[in-house]
Length: 167
Image (tube, rainbow, N blue to C red; front, side, top):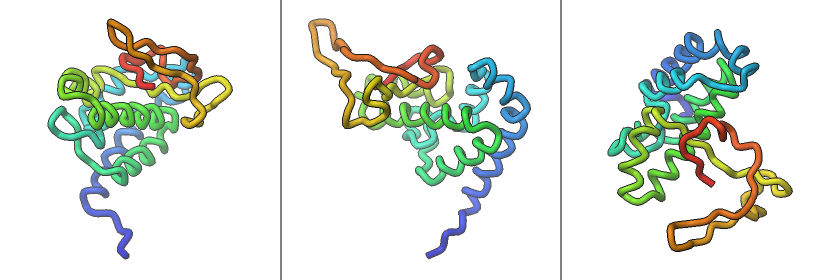
């Protein structure tokens, strides 16, 4: 079995590494101290396709695979693990919208998510359950106007920063 990267994957790693070195690493400590990532940085990442890495191309995604995504996140992590994790979480959310959303939801949400004009967070962690998805207590129930969520979430990466929360 050949484990060598393709020339396209080598180019992806080079692009992500250069982006991290030039745009993230010089500011990472300041952003970490402030507890915020500038939206302008995320929009620059979106221009490179980092806002919808494994999202279909119909709505702005790059249609790359999970290995490609892992290579991007690893390269960005060299500059700042927090920024890389945030971009990874956003991509997981964009993928969920692409995979499970209706045509109407995909059309309305994915272009802005893939470009990072809008930011998404995954709401998993709960007091007493941690990040154990099988032990979650939050429930959604239908009512006359949609759904009502009942439960408590904690430690939502970018929760106060995001435009879309998926739980």
